[in-house]
Image: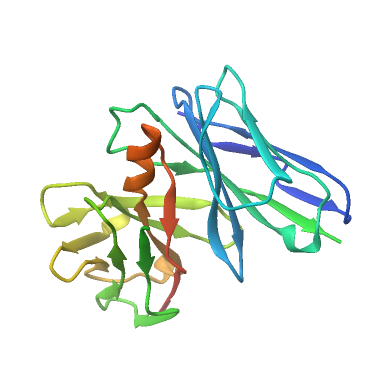
Length: 116
Length: 120
């Protein structure tokens, strides 16, 4: 079974631009979560989508947004990029149903975003 | 709020020796605990998890973890370390409160990570 895929793997943008990252979950997984990883703040939760609805949200400004499509693929968007948005953005997928209390999240390779 | 602490930024061990990477947690309800490993320029790989049951959990690549409720710890262990085990290890806890409030939810709260270095 194919793992979680993320595109693109690397991105370079300049301040003020916007960016869209894509994530394709493992087949059959309906939950997609996004995390930001930086040397200073570590791994921080951005948001989670399940059945096209945002189910959980971290403490990030409104410039960070996401969505999920009917095939469970997800995108996240960052508008008006700032230097501090440079990070590795990780996507994780899981089965996601309410009964899945033992759910495990499986991570993609990440998208490395550099903001100049 | 849920939290995990990894008190060691780095652990050094000789190949063939046992290794331990420490993790302590703080949760309001039942802890759902996870260990992940990250190699350079890669995403996180799942190693093992504790949900309920036996306190000793076995996972991938010969790793195991011991859940200790009284000490609120979930230390990762391996009897014999390999050079290829050198990587960054993260402990994580499932946010049980968010799960209840939102009727689900998979938010993980991660520790700061421990760099494991296994030397010949």
